[in-house]
Length: 325
Image 1 (cartoon, helix red, strand yellow):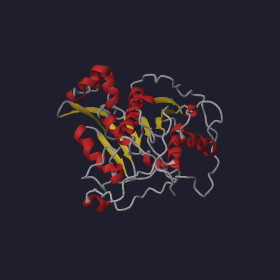
Image 2 (cartoon, one colour):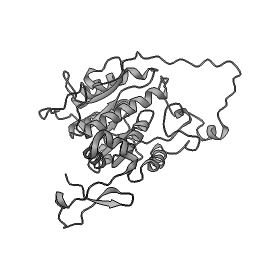
Image 3 (cartoon, one colour):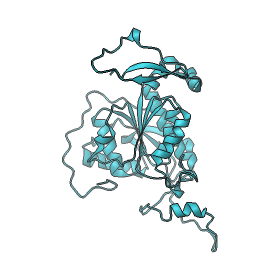
Image 4 (cartoon, one colour):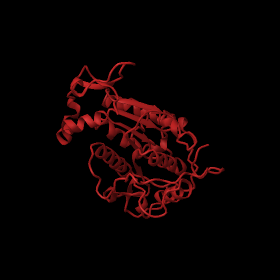
């Protein structure tokens, strides 16, 4: 679908430019070439000019900007994608520092979307970055899809919101990749990409399958055609840190004042390591970029045109776990 003429801007980079009402779309011969941007020349040596064009004209959405999604978003922008939408409702917290890219002493209490926007604009000021500070809900999911999207990265850890996003993308034939659980692991070399129907020993992926089948009419058998990033490493259950009695709290007082109480009400909070969560995010970004370039993802089947989900039954209240009202 035509998205606008290409107009060269200072710095020899090009941006989509809307066609005035009533004007004719330019022919291929009239379209100006995408300019050379030396920030992405090393990438161009991998994907050539045609690849740079595809990435520049692509729109990628990253939903969930935590330990996985924040690193994924940066990788997407550093790959020269032209339009990026960031979706998250949360703010940077003290307990984000060990795993999330935007967590700095200067960003505690700042919405994650805003913190990421400020950083990503310093990486590529030509990238159009759209932020949506909201929580995904099955009752209003169309609100985040107010313009065409080429690829979606699901980095949500709330079950209801995650399933709502996956269900919408599959039904609307939007390409996506989903991240399973990155918590409880220390070995990033065991990360793999599989179809969601084939994941094993991952609680988030297992519960997602259950709810997608039960609530959203996904097939009981066979592929979901949803690439999913997982780890083969057995989960390490969380332990209560045994700090010696009298151990002082060395959290800077000004930061503690901004975040006095954790909002996390989960019964079990998994331990996390940045070198695992970030690799999950980078793997998601790799799937997104390679898919946009038209490359095959090893072990992942393309969704056939004949794949159709049955019409959904109305979902009863109360909401299922993790679903915002």
